[in-house]
Image (cartoon, rainbow, N blue to C red; front, side, top):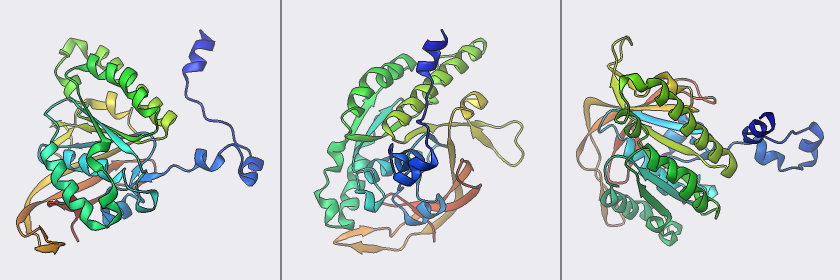
Length: 292
């Protein structure tokens, strides 16, 4: 039993000072955790480079706060070359709720390509692999069977689950909370294992629920502490009642902005490399942008 458990535990190779000096055993790769750009320089600066390339990053928020927009933008930035903050690979997008917003993605791609000539050569739409699942069994099947085959080729360096809350909020009754916690821990362990093995970021979207205890907050992320203890970083998105008129910009014949939109906020709730902070952002035809 001890041998079987030891084989399942994630371990990292030991590094000595001599290894660091000689640069052996891929020591730099093991020590340095890269970042994935969000596509907005101001947000990247606030996050000290972007999304962590290892572990589970949760994006929680109420409806219309921009969670899916954020994920779509990551699906595009991951395909950029490393010098632009990307990983030069595709993305796997697992949908558990609504249908994948393909029309919105096409709109973002058309604007995204106009930023440089190099981007016009990247087939953004062809490098996003979409899977729809309806329940936890289908999600586990996708993660344990389909996803490894896709990741083993090295063509995918980002996995998004939108959303993780959908499969846990509907299939369990109050008496099944202990079983639900075990299933959440098992799912998170599988995602962490994939992230560590293939050195890629895992992004999970979470819903929110009304808060009866938190002072000053109307809602909190769903799934409780059982899920919160499994994730590496939590980003909270919210929509305010304020609006701002976006300036009208002409970019190579296409119009960007020129309409009023809601101001939204991004808050770092917890992260191993970041302090608690918040910033305001808006959503236009291109995607998410920090409000300056």
